Amino acid sequence: GTYPLPEAQLDRFLLQINIDYPDLEAERRMLISTTGADIARVKPAMTRDDLVRAQDLVRRMPIAERIVDGILSIVRAARPTPDSAAHVRDSIGWGPGPRASQALSLAARALAMIEGRHAPSMEDVQRLAKPVLRHRMAVTFAARAKGVTVDKFIDDLVASTLS
Image (tube, rainbow, N blue to C red; front, top):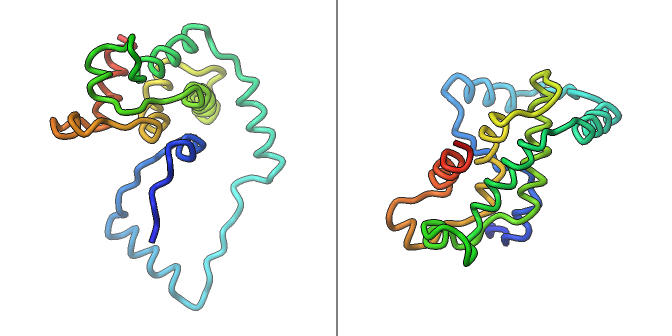
């Protein structure tokens, strides 16, 4: 069997992207292409050197102070501390650490680069908040009983923090 990873190990993953089952036609193509005598050949999307250069470009991409402040506001507001809002203390069992801020900054810059922009926007931060944060925090049992999910909490947090 498999066991869930501890929080410290989950935190090392940049993103948690939830993927639904494929639609019928996609699953049909997968079935046919992976069970026949001909083995599907995977073509590399880029070389190792291209990947290293892309990573370097992302790290060198400028990021505005207001974007840094937005990232810090979201991540810090998600932590249940004595200074947190009551709904955060009541809803969150454990929150994101400093790696979450680093991940959100790098992911926002990478998205900007992929989309051909020279700097990340607040919209990039908003789009990436759930994939970056959802595995770095947990709702309490009491919050789950009230229907609170991590994704819903993050949506509300982003809306209230960046508005």
